Image (cartoon, rainbow, N blue to C red; front, side):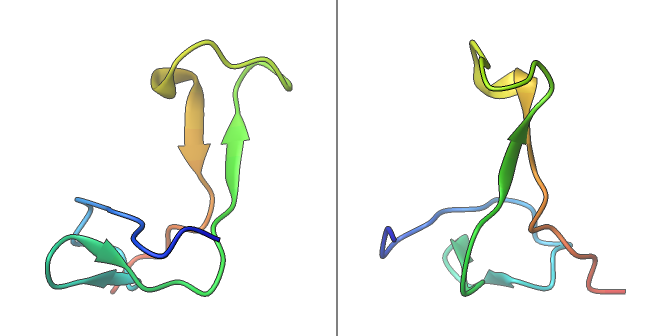
Amino acid sequence: MAKDVLCEVNSCKYWANGNKCNASSIYVVSHRGEHARNSEETDCKTFESKI
């Protein structure tokens, strides 16, 4: 897995200083099955709210 996963969503419980993601794994899904064409067609399912 990548060492430096960046994330700007500071409302996520895995967000850390320096816009780092400290989740042990990352799960990304596509809105178009397996064939996303750009980042707008994907979502990070690892996101969990801090609240």
